[in-house]
Image (cartoon, rainbow, N blue to C red; front, side, top):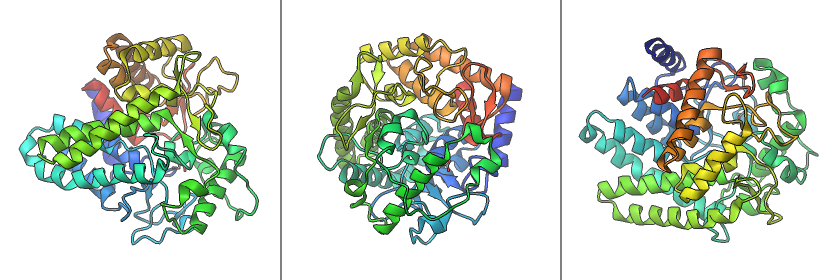
Length: 416
Ligand code: DGY
């Protein structure tokens, strides 16, 4: 395990650009939001100061409205598409104009729990607290216009699960006409058959151009978007972060932030029940435009266990994962669904960050055995195929980019 640990640390150091870490060189040459927050958890195991800097850099680029963008383009790099000019967000340091799963609140609590000297990081935590709180407030203000307690994503890149089966039906509503001709770069770095399709990219781009035409006014995008999906995993990450931020705020005597975030988490948990599917033994996405649940058993509905769902639900989710019957868990889509694709990005492959959050949630819900199986499978994948971006759940084959930062960070957490 020492060799594994050192190999993971090496990757984090190689991808370190000083005040932020790139997910991997080539394919992803900038700072990504949830990659950074989860990367910090790995950095905590060998350089706590550097870990806090990772999160501080991210929040230094928060928008005045409260949104924390999904990419910060610190340094120009032609190897990635779509770059800053396509986004056109007009920020001092260019950023994208959409957000990503709000894992920062959870990460900060975990970082404080791991801190060798809690007192020493208190000032840094105190400075970050209102920023994370503003991000959470922004979510409910702009992505929950009917006060349901659940927030919508407006672009698949926001969920991070770019080409999930979940988005297939809602994507039918997204047009592609009028988009500026473009050249993809991702397929130069990774096998095109492991990446999203051109039809999906056309729609990713249409949404970006549509939002850009609205000048990235984040108060207008929700109602103007033909794509509005309530993703249980995305919401669960937000609710967990709200609950964790409330704990942190309470410790620091910030009772306003604590009460506000407790209320988001409690309302959200109650509303999440409306996404439960007994037939699938997991939660499902809801298409907010049609109001209907989306019949797609993806890992988004399993990831919901990351927040404090009822114990019986967690037990059922553990059984659903076991029922997948893949050699390596957790598949990002149910292998029992004909749309499952073992190698294509989020339509089947295993991702270590998702494994980590599911295992954490299961363990908190008393499902220790199921959690232990997931950590064992995760480490087995590394042993077999190295620190890949994602893996085939049947064969364990490495897929996507290599030397992947958040995969390495999660290994340090699994070994801890
Ligand atoms: C990509 O470009 O593949 C990313 O997932 C967008 O964040």
